[in-house]
Amino acid sequence: MHTDILICGAGAAGLTLAINLARRNVNFLLIDHASEPFGGSRGKGIQPRTLEIFEALDVADRMIAAGGRYPSQRHYAADGGYHDEVSVQASAATPAEPYGEPLMLPQHLTEGILRARLAELGHAPRYGHALLGFEQDANSVRACVATAAGEIEVRARYLVGADGGRSTVRKTLGVDFPGESLNARAVVADLTLSGLTREVWHRWGKGAGQISLCPLQGTTLFQLQMPIPLEGEFDLSDAGLAAAIAERTGRDDIEVHAVHWRSDYAMSARLAERYRVGRVFLAGDAAHVHPPTGGQGLNTSVQDAWNLGWKLAAVLRGADDALLDTYEEERREIAAGMLGMSTCLLDAARERGDLRRGREQQQLDLGYPASSLSIDERGDDAPLRAGYRAPDAPLLGAGGQPHRLFSLLKSGDWIMLRYEARATPAIAPRRSLRIIDIGKHAELRDQEDHLRTAYGFAPGDIALLRPDGYLAVLTHDESSAALTAYISRL
Image 1 (cartoon, helix red, strand yellow):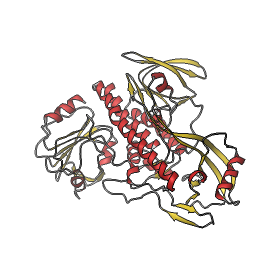
Image 2 (tube, helix red, strand yellow):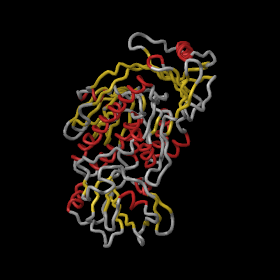
Image 3 (tube, rainbow, N blue to C red):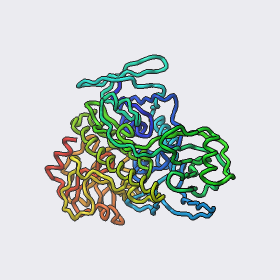
Image 4 (cartoon, rainbow, N blue to C red):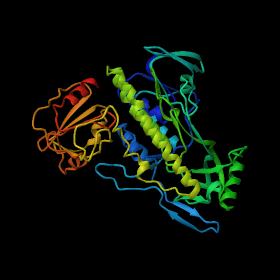
């Protein structure tokens, strides 16, 4: 079999990458060693920045309709008393930030919606396809894949390993995965039970004896989470989990009717030393593993794929191969920060029972200002810098119809915004570059000055937006040599 991109792993990262490639008409093959899709709730939080990405992929509204808001947490005392606490910060949506709070949606529902979107684009994962090994040369990757019908060889231009923490791709590359064990082990399970209201997230105890039962939005299930001893076997049977719930809650009125999925895992924080080796890339948990605190893992994995997808498509269409080096340059630093934050949140949860989450976890402030892809020719006093997320803004079309800046990002193109330009464009139109005039008599109008305020625009300013919605170039001069060279190169 021949393809441009072979993706190993059909989790959230692999599916996001596949959708991103499919909408750009890039040829790919998505495989997974599992015989069927994952059916549990391991990751259940979708952060606002990830919702913006899912909007560009036309799935955000489906996910919001399928999920729900995070409930308050109800902390029970030993005597049966309790107090409720809002632990996940929610803010009102603004013109610049259309999603003000995280969405709770169990992982299997998130991935199911992504698979449905992929099917609409004419593709589907191939389950029961296990990567056995691969070799690469200057022009291609040759992979051996085991299927139910026997072994096949797949020849691809590039290979992406999104195949989890035990990644076959990473191990075959020989990429080190340094880090540390966090001396924490836990159980997570999806249960059908009675005896608890679904209006709050129930928590008992602190430290090693704590337990939580969270109503999973979009389902009739509860998610069980609790730490367990580092050593020895733990009884994960239905009866064993029911007994643990009774013991840790001190209640006999919580009845477990069925356990739909269960897992125990030891927590660690690890980061791959490299994200790229030749024509092979690592994404998602294959590149970074971490404790689940803060709801960062699935989101960081999706954003890996979002970053890598447009770059692979651009290089396949003739962009400089060096563009692919910026994937590691940009994403590895983000993952390192995420690992540190998740570990600190784990310590706070273990030591103080502190489960509050706020702006830092929403990932709206993450960006790439130090990237070689970021050029900023404005002064240091500008409110927005190259490399950061491009804010949204409501606009009005010349015909009177309302628009949003984010609607432009669905094209997957580069977007050049010319704010109240005084002359014809200095940059000629070309493939994958959309030049948008914004002004009083232009195609789009900033009627309420939301765009000017968010971007710090003055008349004549230029903003070049990357296909992934980050700011590539900010300049006062449309004839800037740096801007011209940048566009010609990419």
